Image (cartoon, rainbow, N blue to C red):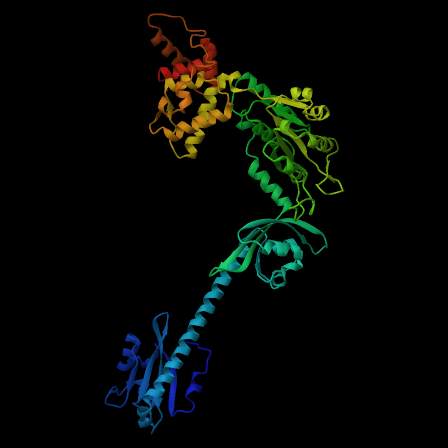
Length: 565
């Protein structure tokens, strides 16, 4: 039991012998000592009549029957005892000065207990620090803990690699040694988790752009330090790409001729760097095609950076596209890379290009022609290696005729046009899409796939789907969430589909089977026979429909009608 104090000096002027004994010493064969350890009570033994244990080692140790014992506590447990025994011939003195000695022993005990508590805290803090250091050794990203004065308290191994310094050198340095005072002052203003764009000085003397996520750390409500995660801009590009590129051509569902023709064209032009414009109504999946083209190109390992030109205010759009330099406008407190720079080595996808403001069209034309950008407020050009894919649901030819869209930009972008057909032009794909999203959403919601009643199937096939694939997704998600039974009924559909007219429905009597008095039985058996022959996959059902001289949607309706498995 280490206390790191010389408690005996307190009693130098007293004729007593004072010792601090742990609770596990041999003196535990003394009943009085045991009583103190078990109860935590103080004891004062004045003579041999009170201390009757002749073989007690405490008696041998102190050579007296007059002593005071006080329990030493740590975390509310007795961990030792403080014994003050009279020297030979001074027993009466100890009894006469009991109160004075008791006060000093209490003071000494308090001192010892506090010291033990501090030592325990030091040990705990050291263990926590070792755990923190162990955690930092496993962190793969550049992470630092920085004090209020800028002193670096801890770093991950990635920080050491980024700045080519060993950990022991970085810890204790001031963060201003690796970034500017302005950036540090700016980051210190964070009262909550906040992201900043900064530049750090590398040992080579070059500046490297980072995104710094700063989280203030508090103790008892007071800011004590900052947790900083640095993300190099190149890594940021990769992360954005990993988050955004979700689709490939495999994710485009449909076997109809219109959609397969479009997919074939997209697959053929994907490997090249040709500028592509994807056209189609809202909800047809234009970004899905753009991502699929990127994934099938040699740029697939590069970033895929999207930007919706209609979703950004005109005053901010130029900065979003091309970036800006510090001081370019009010609020531009640091340099910022635009989407074209982030897409360097990959693909930039400009959605709703028909909504691009006319003044920016000239700047975009220059980028398309020269593959160079100028940040807002900058005078130098920066080359960018990007493939450009655009998309729009608007009629660009009409916009050009009205003078709302530059004709030269139109021809630069309209190199390879891809026109995605709406659902109403590929109705045979509706069952495939419904089946795909029904299984997809059921898995995501941890539910078993449901069956669709014939009446619901009729309504879904008959509906014109003005919102295209996006609307169909929402409808399927709607009844997956709301239908509590295994069979999807009309009550589980959105309100507008419960009463809607069968707009654009396929005529059920189109190419009907020959009518006979026992038609129902023959028709069902014939369908089962053909399904057994060709199989029950989508391609097989298409062959069955051709054999029966009916459309694929009509076949699906009949399968549901006859409850064919």
